Length: 146
Image (cartoon, rainbow, N blue to C red):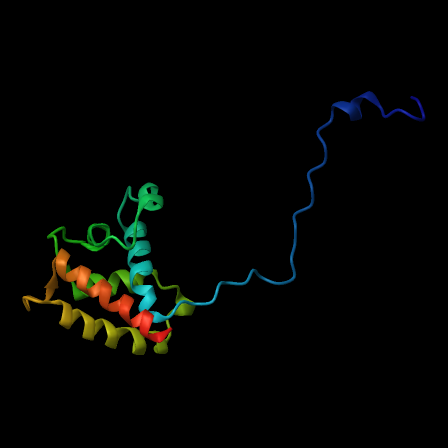
């Protein structure tokens, strides 16, 4: 063997794999959104996680489109959203570390207030027009707090 050239068997061998990267601190999470902003974001994520076959369509989902929000959250497919469907959809997607007493004490009263105000016909479920009203009420809350 030559002093300047590697052995032929070393030329054909696969290169060594790089050592795994290690970091001393875990990645940081973005700051949590205010509770009222979580309604739409959590509803979208909840539906995508629970309803089979919709994960591929998630990239096309528009959380500002009441029709799409209705489709994702309407568990019993009656074309209306109950308080429970909205609450459960949001809560199923809130990560454990974000589920705090503060979240529930801020979010639930707003959902109570806006749900009742949006339920124009008083049937305790929201149709598409009433869902649109609910979404606008949460948007108005966000604007008022800024």
